[in-house]
Each structure stands twice: as C-alpha cells, then as structure tokens.
Length: 356
Image (cartoon, rainbow, N blue to C red):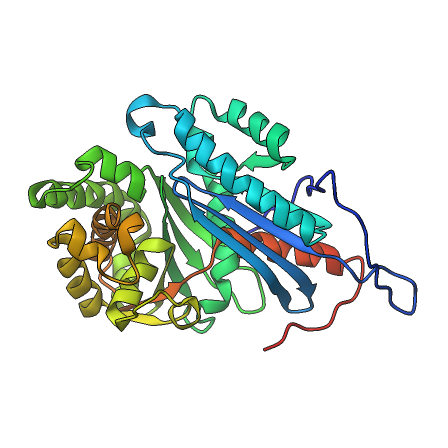
C-alpha cells in the first residue's frame, strides 16, 4: 500500500519565517506542518512539528459545518452550507498563519468530490482564505486513513478489516499486514452511506424503526459481494483478522458505552469495544427520542440527528462481519497526511523524537 505524498504542499501566502531556529549546520529547525480535512459534516485541522517517530501536535480545530447537507437530493452544495464551511476555513487559515506553518496539505472528501459545484467552491475557498483546498479521490482518503490508524493495528495478526463511516461515505479496507513492510490493501470499497446522506435518504430528521431496518438490510446487501470476494467473515471467525473502526459513529458509541459526561479523545482513541456492547448501545440510541439522544454528553444536539444513521451503517458492518471486538480510532486522514509531511521534512533535516 502506498500512501500518496503531498503533490504540492501548500504554503499560505502570508507565511513568514519568523523566529528561525537552526542546528549546528545552519539548517532550519522551525518547520511546522498542518493537515486539514474538510468532510461532508466536519472541518478539522491539526498543526504539528515533525518528529522522528511521527509528529507532535501543537494546535487543533474542529467544527461541524454540514457541507453536504441537502446534496442527496440537489447534487450540489447549498449556499448556506458553503458559507458555514468557508467561515470555518477562515478560522483554520488564521491558525495556520499564527502558527507559521511552513508545509501543509488541505484536503476535501466526499461532498466536494461529488458536488456539481465542487470546483467553484474550491476556487472560492482559495480566493477568500488563501488555502489551496484539494478534493481527493475516495481511494486516497482510505489510504490516508489507514496510514493514520496503522499504529493501533496488531502486527501479529495477519489481516485487518478497517472501516471509516464519515458524513458522506463509508470506506472499508481489507488489509494484509506484513512485518517490517507497509500493509497491502487486498480490497477496498467506498459506499455512499455516510451519516448525512443516509439520514437524508431514509427519513430526515428522524429515521423510523421500519426505515432503520430497511437501511441496515440495504447496506448489508452492498457489503455482501465484498465479503464473498475476500472471504472476510471466514477469516475473522478463524482468529486471523482484526477489526478497526474510525470516525464519529464508532467513537461516539465508545464514549456512550464508557458513560463519559463529555467526549474525551484521550480515553476513546485506541480503546476496545466488545460486540455485545456495540449492539447494546446502538439499541439504546436507535429507539431513543431526539432529546434523549441529545442528552448524552458524547452526542449533544449537533449529532443527535445523525447518530441513528451512523448506527445503521455500523450495524450492517457488524452483522456482515461479527468480530468479537472492535478497536476504536479517533484518528484518520489528518494523521495520515501529517505522517507523510513529517517524513518529507525529515528527509531534509533531523528532528528529536516525539514525546511518549
């Protein structure tokens, strides 16, 4: 598996090399890297310094923007959605300037690559924020997510099934892990089944119980050929494969299962979810009212509308591939980009290891 390196790393027009730090050879030690992921539902930024074993985060930002709202019917991003996204991206651009980012990559996923007005939106972002936003293909999105999540996979178990349920799509990878080598992607699918698109397709704002059962069945039908081709369920049952999930649905379920009053990435990222716990929490959320779902500290009113759709996608995955447990990752595209940028910086200079 090859993780694509940044094609043309962005340098914001107002970047300045202030406060340069150099080593004994006079080389610049002030490199700051940044990764931005504009999805169908969220806008997320991470700023970091390169380190030998990865990177060290120094700043971050996240905002719900619902960029893909209404796209299931119109095929285009609405003016209101684009305004929300641009407002968030202006905040990101300001942080990038203040942190003196010298190397960055800023990508957009499903909403931007599918929308009829995607190119116009990218041009608007460049004009109003100075950010060179790049709409990447779903395959590259999956590769970057895998690269970001790789440290959470057990190298002693030869196969891994990873899934990423986003706002506009769900990416699923079947991976061979090889000692001392990069993992090999044996199979990959991208389904138009993100939490925003599924919510709009099956009953916005509320998904009724009969519609929920139908959406689970529909997604299972889309997953079945992929399973039959790669015999994934059979390999999982033999104990020769592991399962990892990333993005908001699985992290939310983990937080609810832990009883967290507020979401805490440090305790969710890398935790394990038993399959019984997954089904118990999903049952609790699917048949709750909007206000009951919103009352959970890890959900709130912003996510209460979308969490049922996420449960439906996750239930279809879990019924197709009933593993004993799932490793939970609160990481993905941004981390994959930062690892690539860090390697690029390291090829030019030497940096201390990241703190453990």
